[in-house]
Every structure is written in C-alpha cells, then in structure tokens.
Amino acid sequence: MIHHLWNGKVKVITGIRRCGKSVLLFDLFYAHLLSQDVQEDHIIKIQLDQRRYYKFRNPITLCKYVEDLVSGKKDEKFCLFIDVVQLTTKVIDKENGGIEVSVYDMLNELNAYKNLDVYVTGSNAHVQ
Image (tube, rainbow, N blue to C red):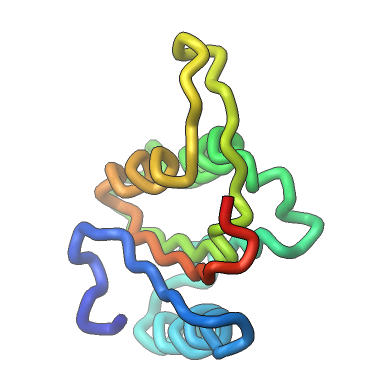
C-alpha cells in the first residue's frame, strides 16, 4: 500500500471475513501515514458496519460528505478509508433522471478528486 500512495487508483483490500483487512488499513496503514506527517484530520475514516456511519451506505450521501470535506482545498491532500464497502446500497438518483447509483459509481466519482487517495476494504459477505 505504501508503494501505491497517490497512484490515481482506488486501492481495494479484499479477503475473507476476520482476516485483518480493517486492522491493516485503520491501524497499521493509518499509523504509517501519521508517521509520515499526514495530518490526522486529512485521513477520512468511514466504517460502514458501525451505526454512526450507516447513512454513508447510501453512495450519494457518502460522496456529498466527502466532497464537502475536500472540495475547495485543492492544495491539500486527503486519504479516504472506507471499511466494509460491500454494505453500500444501490439507490435511485432522482436529481439525475432516476438512474441507479451503486458503489462502483461512488468509487469512480471519488477517484476523480485529484486531492483524494481512496482505500476500501471488502469481503464477499453481504454482497448485493
């Protein structure tokens, strides 16, 4: 992961349940970023299996939240960690002709921000 920082791609950490994906990202890689002088408030952490983050299972809500944090700050770099990405839901985007929006659309949109480096974890548990 260290060698793929800021490569312009979404980094996906996959594996069976309980194999350490979240520990790798939220503990070890997080500590590495802090040791490299990345500001703590520039690492956005969203754990979709925790109740306080349930609203971000909606990809439109999640994109809006992240956009509000990073837009207008083009000279600052942010890292986004999304845990248990398979818990996101498909939703209808009423603002854009009623099309269905999924996790893939969300990741493509977030990846377009040049000041955002995106990391997600996921397993085949609860896949839609």
